[in-house]
Image (cartoon, rainbow, N blue to C red; front, top):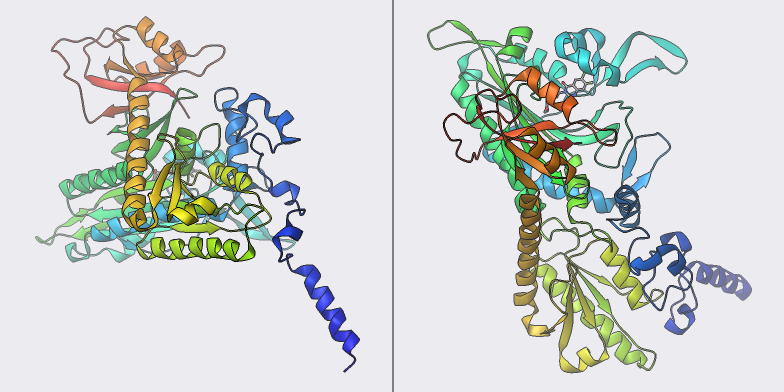
Length: 543
Ligand code: 86X
């Protein structure tokens, strides 16, 4: 074999490998598009773009909220844009957040006896129209497949916007006797609603991911109980996992799912825009669908009865709410319980360090990573040598990792690390190697709690009470939600929407009738109509 050939091969191979010596690597700049904004002192060109915000995103959250959000989801590597308008790629950083919700919720519903299944995403026109009454309101959003290759289909096929009309014909076949009940199924799927309003990652996308639960019972009390159990799980997803405050309540007649009996909801709020946002819904459908689809059973007394049904859903919109609530001018902030990486470990070699000390430092990082992982902490080293420590700090801050561990030469000598919180709620803290297994989980817990507490404080400070329309409008102008005594009138709610619409802002809608009600003194009047109030209702401009 000619020696030259091997040499050539090796040379080519070497070109494709990243240079292995730090000295050589230092000159290699990271590819531009992967480069988050640089910190002060490093940001030669980046600085001009970022104005006074210094670190993190080019636009601050308060200056231009929507631009801030658009940049954040890209720079945190949650989303990539896509050629079909209204559709986005969920990158691993976002998908792992969805998986965290999925894993937890899936475990909880299985404890309630719910099983997963998968129904087709296509439905015939005839099936869709079985639910004609309220499909009408949504018809414009249904996407259709009309062709296969170049040949027209005989019948256009719809893509599911939701699966009632796909699932319920099967329930009608499957359920025969009271012994077949309760039937509790869930599916994790995509869904298509061809909306024409401005799309926004997570909040309004033409295709989204969700879970939809569809259950059938012999009696109403069983159905009622499940509606609330599921709603409680939704509230826990928000409050305990995503550290996002919500209000649990009942939708008014104007806002409920028209196909059902009553709708319960968890309502979130985005302080920066002053808008409420429906965060998850759990419906009692009553017997409306069982009548329509003939879902009945032979009871113990051998009489045929109709089932009581529920449906419930929560989508990737939840991630948008979390991002909007917790993100700041530096980027994303992730609650530790869902963060794909809870702590990032970064080595800080300096130029004077010997090769040996450099290697020892990197091995220490890997060793601590392994130690933390064994204890169930999602730890990750970033030992890349072609990126500077400040660049890495910024990178992981934009991505929202709750804790950062730094190890420099002095730390190696002292047997310590520095821990920095993404939320900046405390100064960097030195911790001995052998204290890490104690301190890191504690800090993660503290961050989780502190994120929820501050978000809750802000949420609560955005609820005002009003007893007159003037007070009501003034609260809306302050970008707040309003809790007001309400008559529960269907038409009156429509009027209120018109009365609160301004040239700049949409009208207010009811968000929910909170389950937790302040006392309503006897004879209290509706703030709007002057009729007798039925309850305190939460209102707001909303998404
Ligand atoms: C309402 C009701 C319900 C199961 C949920 O909220 C939770 C999970 N479904 C969904 N809804 C529609 O029925 C609907 C129907 C059509 Cl045809 C559409 F294009 C859009 C829809 N959006 C919502």
